[in-house]
Every structure is written in C-alpha cells, then in structure tokens.
Image 1 (spheres, helix red, strand yellow):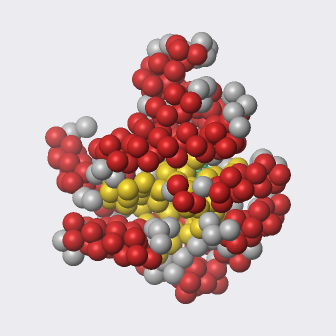
Image 2 (spheres, helix red, strand yellow):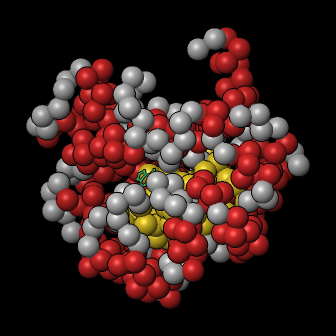
Amino acid sequence: MSDRATARLTNYRALPKVELHRHLEGTLRLDTMLDIARQHGITIPEDVLRLSNLVQMQEEEKYSFQNFLSKFNTLRLFYRSPEAIHRITREAIEDAAKDNVRYLELRFTPVALSRAERFPLHDVFDWVLTSARDAAKEFGIIVRLIASVNRHESKELAEQVAWVAAENQERGLIGMDLAGNEAEFKSEPFYGVFKEARQAGLRITIHAGEWGPAANVKEAIEELGAERIGHGVRVLEDDYITRLARERGMAFEVCVTSNFQSGVVPALEAHPLNQMLDRGLNVTLNTDDPSISRITLSHEYHVACDDLGVPMNTLKERILAAAQAAFLPEKERGELVSQVKKDLKF
Ligand code: ADE
Ligand code: ZN
C-alpha cells in the first residue's frame, strides 16, 4: 500500500463506526485457525498461504457466490470446543474495536457452530453471548448479537434457533437473519419461523436482492417482516420495489467489497452504491465477512469515498443512519445516535 493510501486509511480509522452486518464465521484470524487446528488435530494446510487459499478470496480466483460461500466449508471446521468459540468471538470483537467500531451487531449461525462437535444449540448461544458480553466490556464497544439461519437448512432447525434466540433476548440476542444461498434456495419455508420470531420480540434482517432478484426484497419486507435488508443492491432492478423500500425507509446493509468478490457486480467501480443513494435509499456501509474479504470497515469507508466518489459528508450521514437503524430499544438507540453525532462532529 502506498504512503498516501495508508494515510487515507488512518483517516477512516479515526472515524467512529457503526457495523450492522458482520458474520462471526467470516471474521476468523488465520493465526487463530492454525492454533485451533494444531490443538484439535484438524487437518488443514500448515502454512498461512495455503490456508489463505481455502478461507479467503484470492485475486486470481473467479469472483462468484459459489467460490465465496465455499470458504465457509473450511471456516466451519474450527468450532471444536467452548474455548475455540470463546477465542473466535473475543477476537472478532477485539478486531472491530481496534477499527474504531463503536457499535457492532455481530451475527452468527448457531447451527454451523454446533455441527462439528454436535454441541447443543443452547450451549452455543451461551458461549457466544457470554464471550461477546465480556469482550465488549474489555474492549469498550457496544455489541449485540443476531442469530442467522441458512436457506439450505431445514425449517425445523430454524425453528429451534428461533426458540433459543427468543429465550436469550435479555442477554444481548436481538434479532434473526436469513442468510446463505439466495440464488438456489427460497425463503418461503421460513415465513412461519420469522413470524414467530417477530412475535417473540426479535428484530428481523434478511439477506435479499444480493444473489437473487429485486422481488426477494419485496418478499423479505412483506412476508418475512424484514426491518432491514442485507445487501439488497439488486432492488434497483425494479422501480416499484425501489420506491416501496424508500417510502418505508428500509435500511440497506450494503457491503461493497463482498458484492464484488461474490460476483454481484463485475467490478468495484460498477457497484450501484451511488445509484442507491441517488434514489434516496437508506444505505448503510458494512463488511459482511472481513476475513474472507481481507478488509476492515475503515477499508470499506475508503472504497466508498475514494473509489466510488461518495463525499465525506455523505459517509458521515450514512454512519449516523446506521446508528438510527440499530436494533436497540428506543432509549439506547437514541443514546447511540447522540454519541455518534457528537463524535462525528455533526
Ligand atoms: N453468509 C455469509 N456471507 C454471506 C453473504 N454475503 N450472503 C449470504 N449469506 C452469507
Ligand atoms: Zn451477509
């Protein structure tokens, strides 16, 4: 990286940040993976470069959702003990805090974490929530958790996740998310689960309009009760749905580099972030899977401003918009908004 690029990144690092869309399973450090593999006898390449091929997008590989999602096949091998889950959660929060993220909604996939060792879902929730609470205190950052279910899993498993999530609302578990392969799996089997989750008081965000069409954004809002949309960049393909989303003030959790690396857009410069802003959509900027993409949220702010030409003032407005779209109770959300406003010197 040139001196100028480093200096610019330092400026973005100094900004107070709000992250609404980051997957725990996409935040593992390479060194930590190697340590856990050694401790638990997991057979993976022992040198960092070869491991990186398996768990991070490489410049020379085809940028497609299949390649992007394939990284999770290796990433899921590391949830071998409560200690491993504790370490991964703690480091994810430490890394966010170091990047000056003040408020983090971290999502995790309980079924994926429980699978390697058949851990009970209750235990997985307990370990992640306890570790997140302690790390938030240690690193001085506000953290809330969202439970993700993947589209290719059964609705029965999703129901179990929703039950345990609902029971843990007092412990920082605030929402549910539908993630995974949007191109090949429908949301319909999950309508009932998300309705129950909503009725239990959980907040809802849905990956939609990423690898699937704009109609999926409408479905997420109307059938799944989404209050925010993960990605949603393809909403622009439909004028009516774009207007619907704008009128409802739906927050979009946009992840620019992830969209490029997973084949949503053919080049970073082709990302429709500016069109979304021009259409008056409530855009927020996020990382998705920072270790797969080898990015930080500061890097994403830099891409938005320096590669896509978003003005600094608009970036600050979007950080504030993310605080306003936080899944916090009204009073806490108001406090977060005031603090971010003050720190951004608005
Ligand atoms: N899980 C992790 N990253 C994802 C993405 N970008 N889309 C859908 N599911 C995901
Ligand atoms: Zn995501």
